Length: 472
Image (cartoon, rainbow, N blue to C red; front, side, top):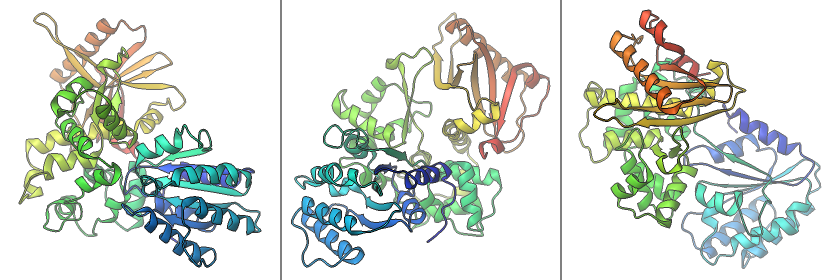
């Protein structure tokens, strides 16, 4: 077994469940390639007594045949495959009861959504197994795992049928943070600076499977060229299969993602519907909720909390990079592309998204880890007589302070000049006058390298979070 790097919160949850004195039902979900199976199998390998994985697009007969083979290998020999899932779960329950062990027995079913085929009876059989047998076994930890977050949310986490409130814990596995990414790369003897890791993260996100493909002794530019732009690049054709593996009817999801990629600051639902040509209604809601549940999209409420004006923003770093530079492109020389204004613009938006994804690290740096904080956006349209402004990230603290955040990606120390100082001061004034908040409104700067503390910085900047603190 391989060591599990990072994932400290998840490990603590596993340990709590293993030490529990009652039956536990854990749901684990998260996007494809995120490392769910690796985490469970490698951290719990000593406790797992049955480990079964569904097969993508296999019919029910094939799934049951696979179950019989695995059961015969891990438990005891079966003369023939069970006729249905009710019989399969009965065999499993009977086997678990025969095991004389005080420590937790871990049963792991991977890719539950693939097992729930039309008319398969899998879900109802799982419900009966848990309610009749599993919930009575104090030494049982049942883990149901799946990449299709929408299916997991509907059928397990927020189940309304026989599994209603039966799940005892859930883990939504997120991409590696910058810190976990750094630990992972160093474990593979890939020695990058924090700035270089940030550059890789902006294109790959914290997806372990993608990071695993990085070859040693290459620069960041060479790595991206190798992964995306060579003839058989490892990630060259990853985009569509990623979404098709998560969502049974992925065309709407792909349309929404492609539309959102054209609006780095995010757009309203109404505009998203018009541009994607997906009519308002159930289909749009389902696809959009699926993308939010799976971590590809964030819904950011405006400061006044009017849901109609909420912005939907694509925050999946891999998808943004792919659609910006790889999709429908050929013969790309990344070294040349990385010298263009388009690249610089993308860097700015990618860095903003990384800050959105590292709010907890930002809170720690600001000394407000224990303070309740809401993340909003804010926009005021300009008129012929009034200036307008847009702020992508507003941190609203319960303790009476509002941070208007400004992210600046740069290759060296950022220098705040007179013009930029005036811009930041002006937007703070516009915000205070429009919102009429009684809270103290301040400007917070997010930077790659610490900004130069000149007179303009000292006049306007209340606090700063530089790249190294995002690795905390």
